[in-house]
Image (cartoon, rainbow, N blue to C red):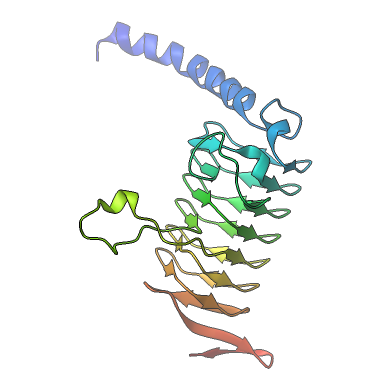
Length: 210
């Protein structure tokens, strides 16, 4: 880099960052923003950070108070924008939750996330999957029946966790990074792996390995 180019870069550096900070602030979705008012509920003190990846059918989505959904997240109800869903809400997120950057919550029937649930980055939660019953049809057009998903209050989902249809995660559960949840995880436990299995449980006042 030439001395002149280096000087220009140094001069522009704080300007670019200052402008980007203002863009991020202006692009955030809050309860009083035009986009925020489209939601079935958007609690006070909550925010969806900019930039958003995919967001549609907001009227079927409810967000509690003081919840933060990180940047580059996907949050959707139904298959496509403008769809009339069969249930309301389709996606419900509680109070004081933190959904990590790059995560996706894709609901079709029922995804319920309790209060104080935190996730790492790139977590994926869905209540519908693709089937493979007909080998003559593309997998992309084969879907399985929706199964409700529940994540209990106070739980933590580590980086890269995938929560599949029918999963029922109890309260105060830790799910280890890159785990795949496919069924029931009882409250006050630690689960890891693909599929996730319980490795520790808190019982009778103490932790026990499983």
